[in-house]
Length: 563
Ligand code: OOB
Image (cartoon, rainbow, N blue to C red; front, side, top):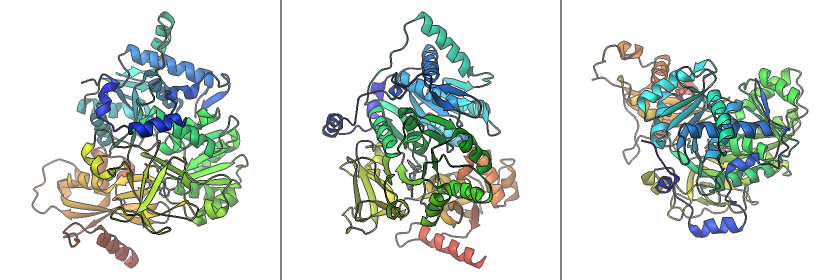
């Protein structure tokens, strides 16, 4: 079941129309270059490229290691066009493996460290991945145990583990074999095919199962180069990555790849808590960092109460969820730095406030599109443009926004307009100067402090529980995370509980702890577990007979007010 060649991916993702593609090439946006060139020879080989909690590598070492790993993976059968699920904490091995896969023309599927059996199984099946590459353990979790379960459930052919591989291939051994192989044979050529897939990102999702987002070398490399310029990264910058490095924000906006492209030093931290990270900022003289609003808030609280040296900080980027102007002002005042708001999506479009913008923009808007070639439209429900300045649905297309999800033709028919605009699901208005203000969301999703949860996905998981006959998930306001998740459930009265399915079934209790335990047991990522459960007899419906999420949100607000 090995997907053999890149040609097979052509019917799995929608290319840009030829006229647009030619235009982007003529304009020099698409360079027909493999992203491996980010580690190009022009970098100073002995400059520090990456530092993690335990080790560090120069640009020269990073390049050598990635090529050796590519060679080793090739020897074991990984080929151009193969999809490979990658799941790492913020460690150097993540960067080495990512560039090894780029060099091979293999396609990493960017799983997050929090993902578990449910998600991994889906990524492997959906992408027909031939391999899974992970760390042995991180954050107290053993990823080899996860690998065992995923292997049993999918068509995976190989598992590679950084650290103690146990029964799996150790990444160090693969690298060593690759070094030896490279000495005896001609080293692998890095193939430039800009239209081929560079990686598969993950959508926050509105569907039962998250969609994969096909990003090409041409489009991703363009967004990385342009983002590095807009965030002011140079070879003197020190970029700190605290959010998961695989996420589009910290990978490419400008992220780890943008920082390496600029010749900067990247610090990968597995810690996020301010007492652990703020000393790293002081020690490494960090200039640039990307945060989600709740993390920015936690760091500020800490910095106000403790003596910390954050003098080196020049740019603090905040994105992933709406930043309040109150928090925005505090960031600028307390960190004495430039604030850059980032409103982006793994599907492509990224908006940034610019470093020279005044407070009217940096405090109160989510920026403007990265590229002058980005097209954005704000439309009413019938897709007609709204009056300037009014709130509407944001649609976009451009040189780095996908034209379709991976292997999802049915979903693509509604997720994109017939002329190729992506329906972001965000409700926005534009200022007179064309800056975007995010006003809300039309998509059925919870944005839990930047982590996206598809309501449909969680509902499907909940109704899989024998004690629940129906579920409807809505966002509830939260002062720290912005939003949390509330699951309204209808108990299953008829269902006879099978013996020993899990602790909760036998008790017939649909309590929050029991439900969270159930979801954990079936292998759902921790951030997707509901924060509140409300049992109801029936769901309110709209006049079309659909569950009214609006009415459920109102019920929730009433309950919260009474509490
Ligand atoms: C980023 O990417 P995703 O794919 O996890 O989530 C995209 C969605 C957007 O459609 C929007 O609903 C929300 O996240 N979002 C924001 C926001 N940034 C993202 N909502 C309000 N204000 C913001 N600043 O989250 C992402 C990708 C690249 C760069 C930055 C964020």
